[in-house]
Length: 419
Image 1 (tube, one colour):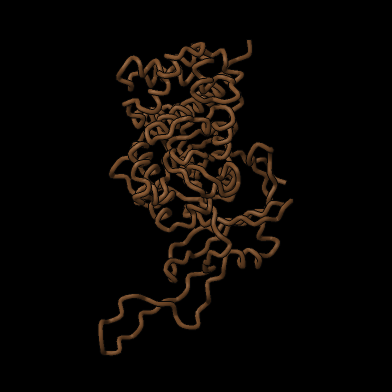
Image 2 (tube, helix red, strand yellow):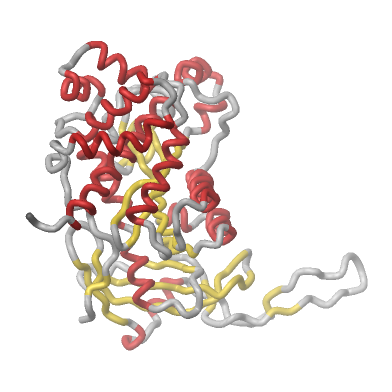
């Protein structure tokens, strides 16, 4: 069995460990307070950060106000107004957040982590609520859906940005007109798929030049979207998405020919496969046909349960696009020794990418799930009591900042020498 291949560490601090880091919270808040124009906004932001970081059973507005300011009605109302109605540009805080992430986690081989973030919500008046797949409860339920991009490196992981995936009927159905008005939906908002929203966030990260990154890791919901993968390539990033077993590839580039012109109509412009040539097998069929010696056993750190042992194979294959051969790509196969559940990925990384790098990227699927879990269980990501467009974005921004504060403190306190 080979040495452990590290992915990214979990933060080692809990909210209980940082309960007394008052000065550190104040210094962290000071990084962002210049981006808030009014004193009341700066004070509410500080109170909100303290509340999210407090060890509370439920991190909603009233418990936060009680924990930080003794439950003063003015404090609770100030947090409510700050989140739901505050005229502050949370996009500026997100940009500053990216610069702070670079300072502590940035790496040349940094990984952008893409995943959906869904939360149950019963109120039909909250923006975007409908019965849909909800990842948090593992089934269909009334809830809101979003997309998040995180960042991971050998130092740690955190969330970078988020988008709200608003159902089409909320934007086009006349029955939702009043709810759109009450929720403050932008009048020019259009319905976009989760892959399209993720692509916007990835482009924003790359174009900001604030954070080093090279890889994009995503699940099958994004990996099965050709437009998303094309967008990743256009940004100069290497994708490592999970794929379907039915995806077809060629082991070798098939022969093409230009059909002869028969003297009538336009001359053929598009090459076609030579008749009788090899058919592109599915990746499942290709994996099943591999000999034992093609597999290599590796141990990698995946998730909170420690090292995972699996057999890996990495093959150079030819992707299929519009029934014709596309680029040469890596087909990466993973088969855990315990479950034997095959996972496949098509990766556009360079030819000289070593197997160990593929193994590490396969293991980079778990950090974003851990960020969601920590933010939900410890920092109240799903506890917001706001219903509108503005409130959701403001709340999610503060949760991202609170999560990274814990990550940053975990790193910095770990580096301090013992007294």
